[in-house]
Amino acid sequence: MNKKPVQARGRLKKPLTGAEVGRFLKSLALLQRDPRMGNIELSEALMSLGKALLETKSSPLEWVIDDIVRGEPHLFREGKSFASLSLQDVKGYVDRSTTPKGELISIGVERFGIAKSRLDRLPREEVIAALRAALEHEESLNIISEEAKRGGQLRSS
Image (tube, rainbow, N blue to C red; front, side):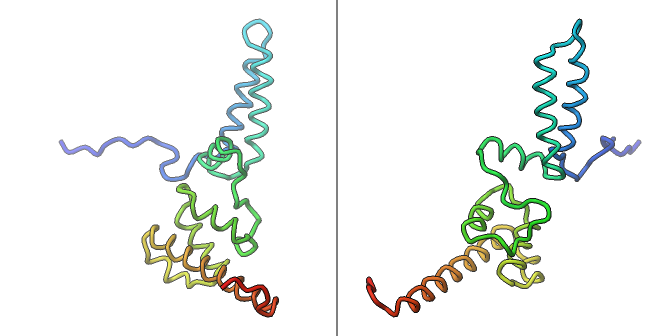
């Protein structure tokens, strides 16, 4: 017989979020709260960690872990537009290996005005290359603008 392999039910493509793990940790903390069978200190620690993870809302768990390990907040949070990111923030975001291609495309479209149809066709590495080229272009425009403001005084070249 030709049977199809059994697939696990539940989430197949959607990444686990920090908030989902936070809810689980809070329920686990309630189980540990029992003074006879549990551990009150562990319960309090799990509850604190669960509450902190709930604040990450729909951020993928991978990002949340990355934030904790590196000690840096993730650059894009819900409600914030990519258009408002500084050049330094865009560089950091582009350099992260965990940044999804869809968000790189959004940066290109919102921050630099690159055509979405152009970026959609490119592999992730080429999208990154296009964003780096746009970053370098904007940096060179900033340098030219600064030189123009100074009137060429104290020019180093």
